[in-house]
Image 1: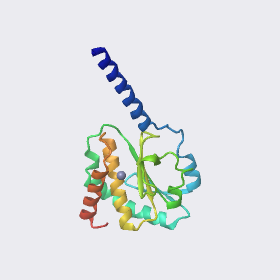
Image 2: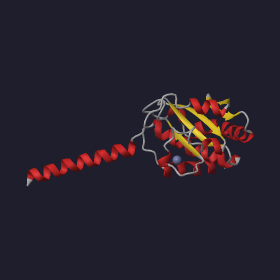
Image 3: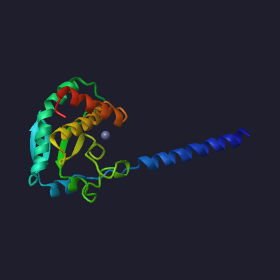
Image 4: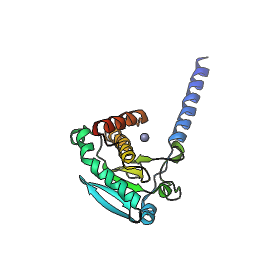
Length: 185
Ligand SMILES: [Zn+2]
């Protein structure tokens, strides 16, 4: 009986691990940004040492990038960013792009689409280049909503540098707080 039980629990563990690793399986892609950088034809603006990329030929993406740039300083102050106790150092890079480019799965193939809704306003990822937290922001939102998306993704970055589990609810709570305090979104 004991032997049977033992075999049963070993089997259970094996099955669980297989399922877990399938769910988490994600291949690291070398130079994952090369297609995006080529097709996006980005220009860069810098705010508090954070580079914000926007598409040269897209006034909307440029406008959204400016809205984000306006909020970076306040974001760093409100989150106490400089004094956060980190478990890892991750630089921030922000990409603002047209809806169509953000949703072009042949270019944005490095995002984990299977865990996201079909249409997204933003995404945060530090999987392929673990020293960089990449923000992908949909540039087709209004200025206020862009700031809200930025706050949401910024909280995912805080979760990342403090090694906390990614929580959508906390990111939403923070973006609500950010918008209430700033009155900008
Ligand atoms: Zn989120």
